[in-house]
Image 1: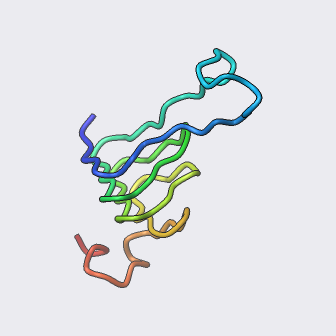
Image 2: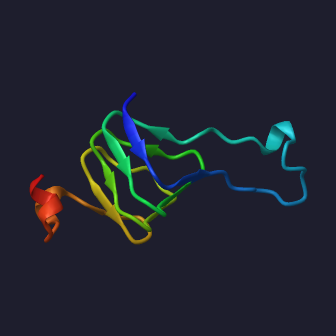
Image 3: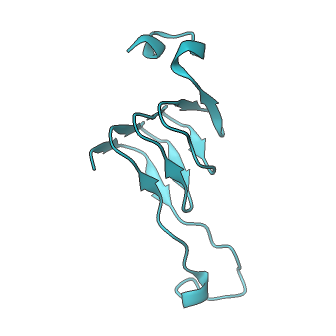
Length: 91
């Protein structure tokens, strides 16, 4: 798997009544498929899947699965490259 990651991949604490390291509190890790870029200060939360050739912009927050080939900005805002108004959409 090839991915460039400058942001953070973090886990959620789904039930604060259970210890952090309790077996039933464990969640799956995030999956970054090939050619994913996670920008500086971006946060990927929980066991989400980020599809191949996806670009997560700096400062974005991802808490849902992202289809392949998308540009992600804000909080779970997914764009297809042809919808993106900046130069990134043509790269």
